[in-house]
Length: 329
Ligand SMILES: Nc1ncnc2c1ncn2[C@@H]1O[C@H](COP(=O)(O)OP(=O)(O)O)[C@@H](O)[C@H]1O
Ligand SMILES: [Mg+2]
Image (tube, rainbow, N blue to C red; front, side, top):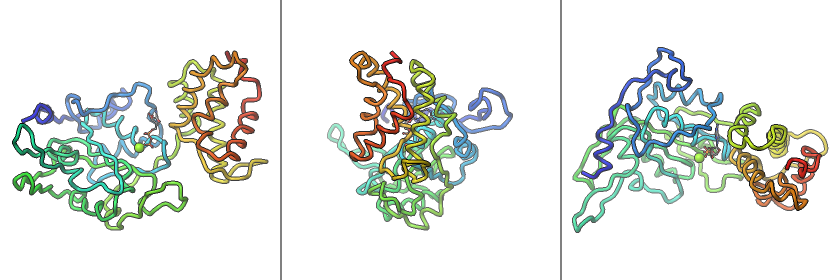
């Protein structure tokens, strides 16, 4: 048995106090997790901010009879929310990213030749089912719907049969969890923004507990920037969050005033963090008369946009950051 399998086999499920795990205060509510972390457990990100949208996923972890389907815009924090909660519970996480040609064996495993003998190498789904842990299927709506529907039995709690491994039958471990993330709710993308996503089979979607994760609130994003970019002046961080909110409104066609034209890019939380980070890195440019905030904005988002949208972004930046950013340095 390989070292990895030995390590996974040695993991011990245990009852933890949900309050202690998530907020540091005992609550008396039990939640199942593992005694210790493993090499498959994600590292805890000390800067991670659990905002209101975390609630559903915490409740799901507490009693997860159904698989979970988390959807929301790109970069809103879907994957990281699940992995950070899993990290707190010491869950091993076996993840895979969906794409149009992903097949069942990519999830279950395949035969390999090692030292001139054939052996079966378990894939992420088989490992999670056999030893307990979270199987995380990111971008599930990129899967071919027929491949996705092949998971129906597993989603119902059926055992996994592996004919290639001598007909092994894996009964789901009590701590096997199945979570998926996607940009659409499985009903295909009407906006045209999420190329490659496919309308999923209705019977497949019917098996999931659904959870929508939007962008964090401005308060949560201000706190996030405070944690991720503490060296940026507070006022700049606040304006960055305002700016991101305004770009999202423009994108949705909800903006007030003169900027009524809709634009084709938007601000994810991921982009916001990148913008703050790049602004710090390009701070020395202020001495050469280049504004670090707008310079970083182009690199974080603007270059992905059309020329017209970039002009709109620059005009908006001048309005939201009126004073010359040279003054910050
Ligand atoms: N609440 C949060 N606290 C800290 N970082 C966050 C938070 N939400 C998102 N991020 C950061 O934003 C980036 C994008 O998050 P991710 O979970 O990959 O988004 P998604 O899966 O929705 O595309 C990651 O670098 C993540 O660490
Ligand atoms: Mg993701």
